[in-house]
Image 1 (cartoon, rainbow, N blue to C red):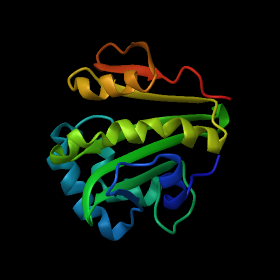
Image 2: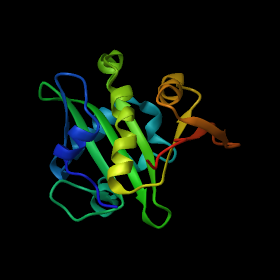
Image 3: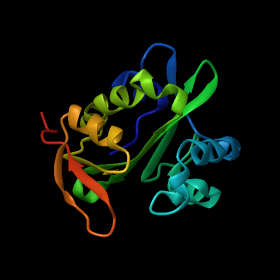
Length: 174
């Protein structure tokens, strides 16, 4: 289960016109983490707060030109400007991919970036040999929940004390 290159990701998960995936390097982290805090203030606490720390990227994320790791992340650009972020984690032993986080700048949330990115998730999983894809969404932001449901994901359950909603892709292998 190897991660695709950014060029392969663009084919597997085509974005709307004018948008493109871009690799992440250590030099882009200060700008990225500031953008994440601005677009999604709740990220500063909880399971995704790790995306605000450089050591997390250095130790656990597959960065541009770096060694293959279990967490993959890419920026989403529009006309040279950072407007989104996406990250996955692979679980090689269980042939699973966990959609960790997708965040889009408020000014670009009507562009259907999330829907386009999620539509390509099945292609990503299939290309890597995954048998299962899952994600968590918070009920506080119904847009993520609705986008996942429109993409064919289904509810698996609620996690007490955590508030997110677990969902899974119902039909990955083809």
